[in-house]
Image (tube, rainbow, N blue to C red; front, side, top):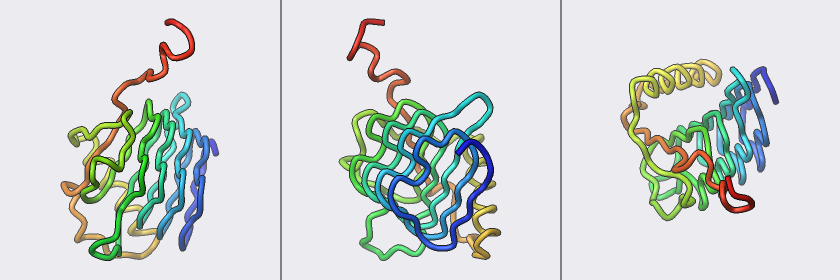
Length: 164
């Protein structure tokens, strides 16, 4: 996917957004495993996936750009927001998660970082769009409850295969 917008009234399965380089995908419900795998930015194109519910294992695996937003709406009190190995191999892009996630759920290549003003504007814009697309009142969502995760290193495999 290089551009455009997909709006899914329901849930999606595995590998949604595989290698997408642009455009937006809004999912009303949950998503499966390996969502956002190999997402990357290309020139001015920045892909986006917004998920209303939760995600399975390997969210954002090998992500090189773009953004994923997990709204974690309508989850049971003890229900996990994201599966294991979130952000494994990430070297670009951002993952925003509404709520608390235990550190063991993440790959070693991803870290929690502070939200800045640009992130707050970005989140508000896409929460508003989600709200309009699915006709849901999300005024109860507080942007401050989101955590932002990004790559520890922009080139994690630099010396693995050849010297740089």
